[in-house]
Length: 129
Image (cartoon, rainbow, N blue to C red):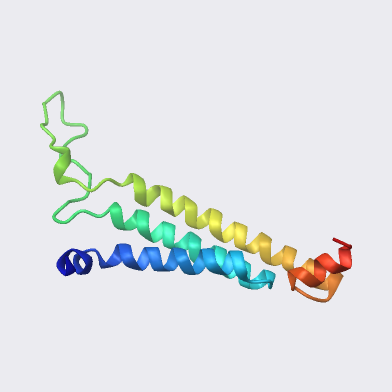
């Protein structure tokens, strides 16, 4: 049992990061702490998908001599190649995450300028809710 747990240590790290991110998003009153928790949660998911996209002994999915060499038949065994799709999708997720963080930081600056605080309960009290 211990061998299985140790061999899958990266999954335990992802679960730990997910729990930290979710905990801070749900329990913290400071909006900046919630944003940091959201980023930790997001990075845990990105690291998870990159991790499952890796393959021991896999090679780059480029077929040598596969283009422009007439009509020769090339036999390809997909099991020997790494799937690039998870890595490409996570690259897109990183770009979207950086943009979302930048917009969230700009909104937090506006909230702080308007209310003088980033504490959620104080802002809600000032709004009368």
